[in-house]
Figure 1 (tube, one colour):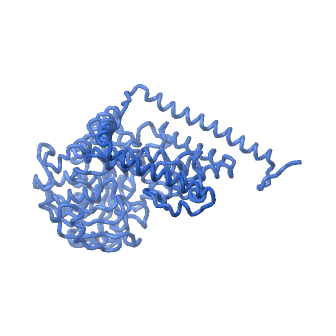
Figure 2 (figure 1 turned 135 degrees about the vertical axis):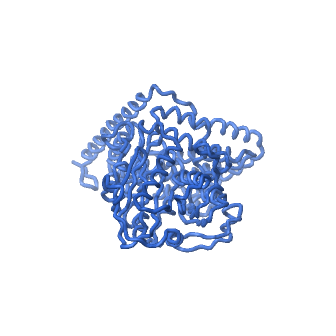
Figure 3 (figure 1 turned 45 degrees about the vertical axis):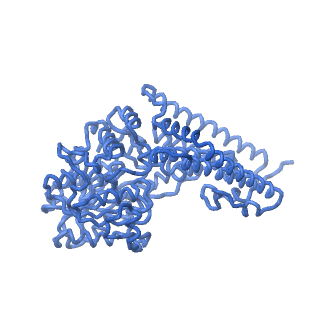
Length: 614
């Protein structure tokens, strides 16, 4: 007699299906291991640092602090085990039928809403419920201990807390196949098919990263630059070895006389400002009657090995300014800069202020740090030793594209690493198509000299804010910026913290300054079109407060996007209306927007081990 399962298969057929899937799992696992080992062998000649992030001195100091404070540690440990005992007792009661036992238990760090534990078994199954709450209790106790025991240098404690968070997030039971009820359920229901799909995805991601695991966060086939993202009509009107200059086509009969030149970061591609017509800041500005130009930085390789901070400024941005003025016939323009592009712009404006250069009429900064005294979690990853390690690894003269992407992902490991490892590789789910995550995955390389200089001069020395910075022999500082400034910080920014941006802004003592704080974070707080009706922003003309919290106490909150406020500010500094300008009327046409530089991808199937230059 043949026994059938609920899906109509016989047990023998079902067993055969499972066996086939498991055989495929083992085969793909072998291919993954082979790819990984090949990548390691290809780097075998490089000297590997035992502690590339220089964590040992920090944890040595933490251990000393723990040993110097035995009573505080003992008290916290007693509280921890008391809580664990209470959790265990209540869990036993729940196993015996008292279903509300854990629900009525109030302990530190117990969380009812956490997307890592969204599956119903984490709350309805007594074993998984105990495992979840025990993890939350333990991870919370570990992090509280690191954050509060004894006295430590605040920067050293912050670094210890950051790496401790990476450790406890990696140990989340949801990250392990055998401890995740959703993965176990899917494996049983799909007879291992989820693992086959997941490991195939992992193998593809390893191949895309040329032996390094580049975790996909979206459907990589759903988007294409120039097809459904970065589609604002325009023309590349000039280029050199560092950038292409794009001029966007007008849609109004009249435009403001002074053009706007965007200076984006080179650690990401510019098209976050032109994702699609509904989100595009470029399109919105063109619709308001501005002539918009965009710097599209090259994705560097060995040919950019000799580039420096000064060459990016003078041969890059300053040269682009000259070309925009030549194309439009104006004597000055407005600049808008984003993130590290704003840091470069700030130093350039200080040099222009010191040397009497009048080519810029106004400057807008989006989430741009100029004072790096407390520059957020990225600063944790930077010290003299890590710069030395980075320098040794950039032997070809540039930092590979995936390195900086990995650093950004570490800042939000639960969301950007572990969540996708479980969803992609264990559950075998295809990531949802999302244009912003596609842009995030379109990583860029960085010239070695430029990147190391940036880390040393700003993150370590904070030279610009301290008045210890010079360009072509001219000492410059923040107070040398004299043009009108519109400065945007975002409240939840983990890359350029709002408090840090505020400190840099208030040091522009000679500038006509308007500082605003936007809701949301580094990207969504900037890319927030008025039509979406999302978030809010705060304004306060009084910049005398020492810290952002002081400024916020007197700030006025306005619902919606700050773009309309910016437009009103910018229009006053853009001169009278003139006839709309045809792109390339003076400089000529090289190719249609978005140009070739932005299309070069490090993970293209036919790409070499480094990004191709345009």
